[in-house]
Image (cartoon, rainbow, N blue to C red):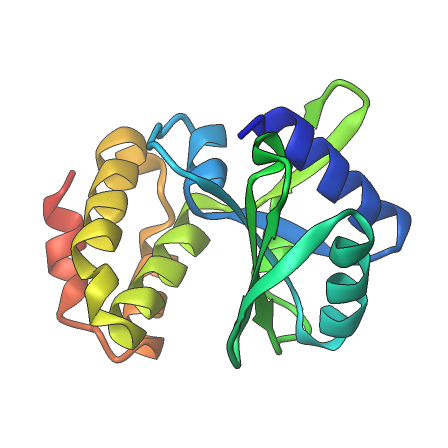
Length: 175
């Protein structure tokens, strides 16, 4: 997959259609200096924009592969356009609004904060035990790389709201 091409194409369209978003997952981790191999691009958008996102992505030649209550996955016939996962949030204010902008060429990309990525990883562990090893490895990599610069109160809050309060000490131990 040509990540720069995919990201530029998709995110320019989201901006053009006034659809707020933030990059999440391994691509977002890369913007914070934490490198991990990935086969897809993960994007968080508002649930209210779901139908607009589906129509938009299909108009770019993507096929709808998988759909669930919280996410949609799309693939493109051209391998360099790869896989795109959209996750949806019901919150009016949250991860999307607190994201950081990175300028790449003429495009400003919205990228989830490391603490928010950790929060989403905790939610993933809670909701899908099959992802546990991968998500814990991602959390560990973020903490090892960013460490003391993280907002530890925000991480503690994520542990609480995901009913994983005991995870906080494990996360701190990665420092």
